[in-house]
Amino acid sequence: QVYLTDSGGGSVQSGGSLRLSCVVASGYAYSGWYVGWFRQAPGKTRKEREAVACIDSAGRTSYADSVKGRFTISQDNAKNTVYLQMDSLQSEDTAMYYCAAVPNEDAAFYSGGLRREGYNYWGQGTQVTVST
Image (cartoon, rainbow, N blue to C red; front, side, top):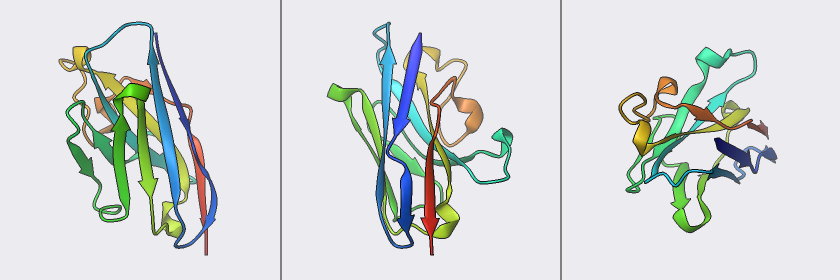
C-alpha cells in the first residue's frame, strides 16, 4: 500500500509564501517515484483539478505556465518527501492542493507529468488561501 501525506497549507496575504510537503510512504521498496502537485480551485470538480508542477526520480521538473518563476518543486529522497515552495502568492492560487505519485514500476500504465490521469496515488489535500 502507498500513502501520501500532504501538508503545509494555510492562509497568507497576497505576495506571501508557503511551502507544501508531500511524504511518500510505501511498504514496498519501489525504485523511484514521479510526484506531482495539483490544485482544485473552489467550485471546481475533481476532473478540473489543475496540474501545478511535477518532478521525476531523476530530479527533472515541469511547471504549469501560471506558476513558472513563482513555484519551485524539489525532493529530499532521504526523507521520501517532495516540496512545493510557493512564492509571490496571488489570490488566484487559492485552492486545495494535492500531491500525487506514481512509482516507476507503474510507468507502463501511468506516465506522471502534468496530467491528472498520470498518477495512481493521491494525498488528502491541504488548503491554501491567499487574501488580498
